[in-house]
Image (tube, rainbow, N blue to C red; front, top):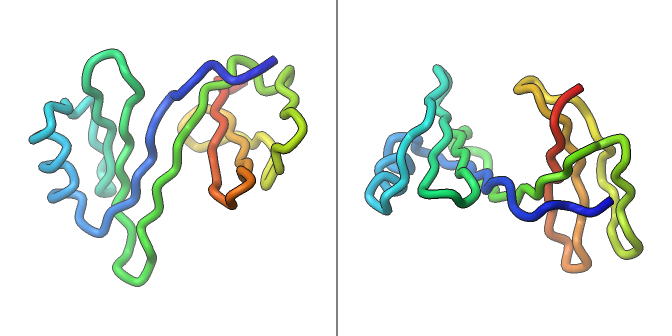
Length: 113
């Protein structure tokens, strides 16, 4: 089993309000906002963008999220370094972290159990 393409872009920011305004200015619509300076945006049928505010002393990160239909059936191919296996998230999915040959981290996201 392989991935099914891009699910999302996960972005960290030091200023939720400015980041939200930036994406709204680009035509993204807020689908939902949490009560802790984060939320999800969408523009058309493409992947969603989830933005979360982090403290000033932490470097904001960006992560591409690939869709996996079934965490139990997925087996990464050669050349894929698994950093952390599939784990349940607090938002109802299961996620695995992998590293590409250049050292970038990627998230593989599957439906929760």
